[in-house]
Image 1 (tube, rainbow, N blue to C red):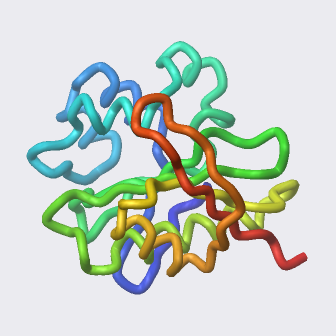
Image 2 (cartoon, rainbow, N blue to C red; image 1 turned 90 degrees about the vertical axis):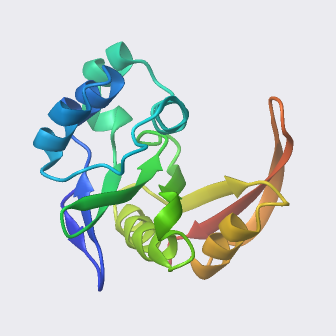
Length: 173
């Protein structure tokens, strides 16, 4: 994925070097690899677990698949969030997830960044749809999903927290 520039943000691809540093808890090394600074509280265990469900061994074995479309969201030289896909899909349906650090929430950054990544994904060969999931009670996430033009398409169960709503945006080809 190339770097993408929106009206207010720059989205830079996650590199294997940066991911290795993050997973090894080398924040300074990750910042050097990216050329930007993380918020003080990032990366933390919760962020790492959500953003990188695959092991470092699996990511190293297939970075083009595991890191497909994954981007860090920057304002200037400060990382404020990320948009990740759950790897390059085999079935043409990509799943996107996103997050913005607490002090940058409520300003439309998650929508702006995720929309750019969803549009990039839908333009890729073989991709027919992008899905996102959230909990019925997560109002902020539901707002982002609505702003992406996604439509409800089902539900799925979370291992411990119950029902997840599934939304989808399909290609117009």
